Length: 280
Ligand code: KMH
Ligand code: ZN
Image: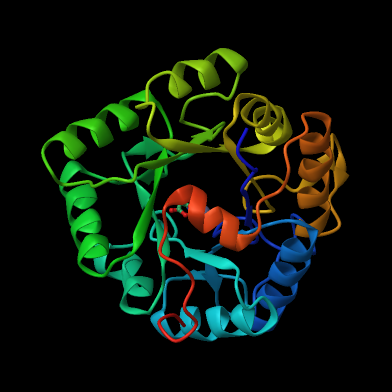
């Protein structure tokens, strides 16, 4: 099997220090969390940014500062900014990190309820527009799908020429309002994508490690991080992102999956080779 690409989602937009004190807000806190996750085995860092008080923002300059701080400590890591941001943000607000020299970003592939009164809106036209901007700027999209209809939407838009290969999916399962992350859900989604595509799993809350294990066993990739889950075990808070990455590395050992370095991850995903002069 291919080596395992571990993505670490170090902060997200919703979780706060009140939920887990290790959630980073400032660029230097982000860089420290990213560095520890990278040392533990993460080759991709999924980045959201925050104001100093922890409120979410998609401000381009905050991204720039945060990415530069991460790059300084983890020179070759793949940095994957979010274009999802937080619920309620506009298209242009969300797309701000794509103004920077980045190699990868998320592309959210459908609308869903997001708990309470929240709706995470990604219309067909939003998806086409985000995909177009990313294509023009040579930014590799990670196709975030929260349920099977989102995969179908990607495949339709791919057929019509709006989304291009290589197709790299993330099955984001367990959101309150989206699809659950049971074993049958995983198999249904995995069997719904083309054989040539790659996939990653993002298990929210209690699904983080069970889904990661399924993906590891079947040749997929896995994301962990405080954005998705704050516990190392039921009721026990993780002491930082590093703890979550180490746990997934241990699971990988059980299945003899070696861990991909950032260079190896770029090859597996068919990303361009890293060139420090071209990227932030
Ligand atoms: N914060 C969620 C509303 C992404 O990063 O692209 C959206 C999200 C997905 O986290
Ligand atoms: Zn995110």
